[in-house]
Image 1 (cartoon, rainbow, N blue to C red):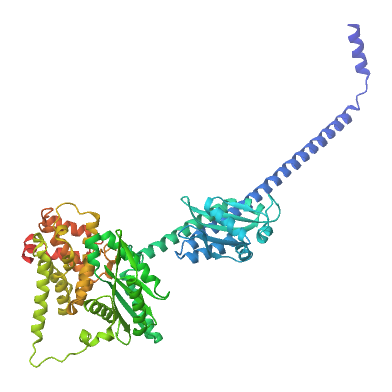
Image 2 (tube, rainbow, N blue to C red):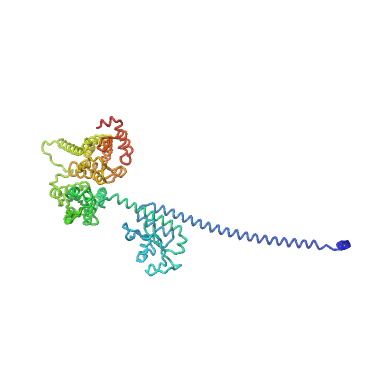
Length: 610
């Protein structure tokens, strides 16, 4: 208690006037400390904000770069996808590789069809030409094409010199060889010069670019192959009948413009039917293939040879007059006659009958040129075979040319000759029908259907006459087919089907031998073409098919479906009409189907037409 009293006395006597000053000092110090901490925090947050802004800016730059790359790839795809021309695509690939990928030089090597060694198609600028002169570079490209794996080669300078390559030389330009692959197949090899560092940066866009290039090249090569197949005979590898006519039309036009001649040879294999009959059609096909090689090897590079018909070949000789063409034909005939053909283990001799004609001396247009060469070939065969005849040689013997007037004897009656022609045509049609008694009357019924369709299409009298005759003789080629095949009740073998498919070509050949029937060749030869181009023998489509052939196709199909056959009963009217409608646009001309269906709305009308 005493101590407490003493403390209280001392407190009452003390001087506390200094305390406010001390409090102010403490408050000021605390405020200064708070301001220091606030400044440090603000500085840290500002630094963090600046870092975030830097990261955002870098991200935006990367995003802009990515957008640029994607835009470039989109433009690349659009550009190289805009054409199917292989050389244009290759040039675009080289040009775009420098712009999109920023490589200094590039080239593309395309493997040959045989796949033996890559074949150089195109190269770019810069060091590309030097690279392609380097045997070491070519060897490495061949290896990349074979293995299907990319290869980075550095340094570039040693590649150009052909020196041994070190394992690595960072910082120097390198050569990057990358295969252009589609579904595991190498379409080519692309070579690019670059720095290895930039290659790593561009890896993503490079892979997409390479994929786009490979697909574009693959599509172009496939298109080239399809184009080639469309104009090529599948058996011999020669050009086909359709391409022969297309090229000859161009050559006659050039002949007129350039004032130079053009000649045609029609080559007929003598006694070819005997080879087929004795050894079979496969042996006959082998003979045709060998003959195609022999004929092709005896011509100039500027000449064109085609398989014109079953055992006929056609040759176009630009710039050759009839005399020069005859000399070429004689050399070919002699070359074949001196050769032995291995047929089913037998060594056989084969001979040729060749007809030659020339424009403009002999013929006045493409059709006359072919017709006169064909007539000369026929004369060569009929007068002993194994010889060459030009149309000028046999002009008087062959009779008047088309368009020439022949004086008629006093009192001659043109109608009598016309009637004789029609009687001959009907006799031929009866011979065709007589080959198979199940189809007797087929040609006459097809004739009536076809003529009525022609009338509804507005054909004139001459056009209807040609259509009528072609309909009567549309199956004349079946005269060369065995009755065993025509009357066979079981399914035909592939070989027998192929024989049947030859009858339009055989029919065209028969008609070509009869002067007043030659105008029937187009509708007879093409009446098994399909409107979508998948028919035979020439694969024509749409309005490329002669109108008469399209009309006969519909009439022939309907008559065949509604008639009795030894391998099936007749189909009903409704079923046949349904099949015609189903085939409109694929097998048949839709317009002609519509006309025919309207023409035979009721079964009674169809029956009346027969």
